[in-house]
Image (cartoon, rainbow over all chains, first blue to last red; front, side, top):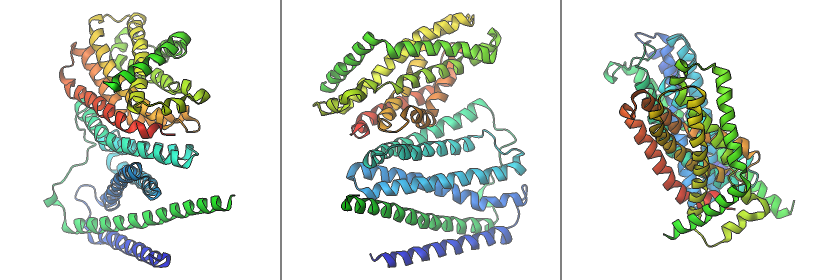
Length: 233
Length: 225
C-alpha cells in the first residue's frame, strides 16, 4: 500500500473517532438524563467504561503479538505488542484517574480497596513492568523476546489475579455501602445506553487510530536503524 | 526420563557449588532472621497481636529472602560465558528451568525450616501443632514463587539493573500466590486445618501447575542468547 494512501485512511479513522466521541459526549452530557441516585457525577461512565474496555482489548493484543512474535520471529508482531502495551497502559491509567474523579463525590474517597479497583491497579503495574523491562534491555532481539514472554505470562496471570482479588474482597469483607448499586439493564434509560454505545465505538476507533500511529512510529524507528546499519554508522 | 536425568545433573551441579561456597544460603538465612528482628521493632509485637499477623509477616520474610536468592540464581553462569556453554550442550532447556527452579526451592525451604521455628520461639507462640501444616502451605507458595521467579530471572538476565528490575516485574504477577498463601496460613493458624480456605489452596495448586508447564515450554525462548 502507498504510504500516503495509508496516511489518508488513518486520518479518516482519527476524524471519525473524534466525531463519534464528540457525538457520544453530547448524547451523554445533554441527551441522557442524570442518574436517579448519583445525579450528574454518573455521566463519567460514558468515558470510564469505554476506557477500560479498550485497555482490556489492548492487553489481549499484547498477548496475540507476543505469541506471534515468539512463533514467527517477525519484527512487526513485536512492534504490535509494544505499541498495544503502551496504549494499554495509557488507557488503564485514564480509567483509574476517571474512577477516582467519580469516586470522590460518590464514595467520599479517591481510592478504596475494592476488588475491581485493585485489579485495575495490578494490571497497570504488570504492564508498567513490561514497559520497564523493554527499556532496560539494550539488545533489540533480546528485549523483544523477553517482553514477549512477559506479555504471555502477564496475560495468563490475569484470570488468577482476578479470582484472588475478588475472593479476597468477598471472603474477607462483606460488600460495604461503598459498593455502587448495579442497576439491571432494563432500568437504564435508553439515551444512556445510546451514549455509551456511541462512545464505545468511538473509543475503539480512537484506539485503532492511536495504535496505527504508534505502529508506524515503531516501523520508522526500525527502518532508521536498518539504514544506519547499511551505511555502517 | 531424559529430562529428569538432565534436571538432576544440573541441580546436582548447583547444589555442589552451593555446598562449597554457601553464599546464597547463608545470606538468605541471615536476611530472613534479620527481617524477624526488623518486624519485631517496627510492629512492637506482643503475643496477642502476633498471632493474627504471623502469616503476613512470615510470608513477607520468605518473599524478600526468596528475591535475594533469585537475583543470585544465574550468577555462577554469568561469569566466564558459562551460560553459553550450558546452552550449547545437547540438553533440553526445560531441564535447565526445572533444575534452577528446584535449586531455588531447596534454598528457600532450607531457610523456612529454620525461620519458622525461630519465629515461634522468638515471639513465644504456643501453637506448635499448626507448624507442620503451615510449613506445607508455605512450601506450595514457595513453589509458585520460585517457578515464576526463575522464569522471570531468565527473562531479565540481559537487562541493565536486573536485580532492581526483577522484583518490579515479579511482585505484581505474584499477587495470586501471595494472597492465597497468606489466606491458607491464616486458616491453618485459626482452625488447625485448611477448612474454608480450600478454594485458595486450589488456586495455589493451579498456579503452580500452570506456571511449571508454561515454564518448561517457554524457557527455551526466555534464556535464548
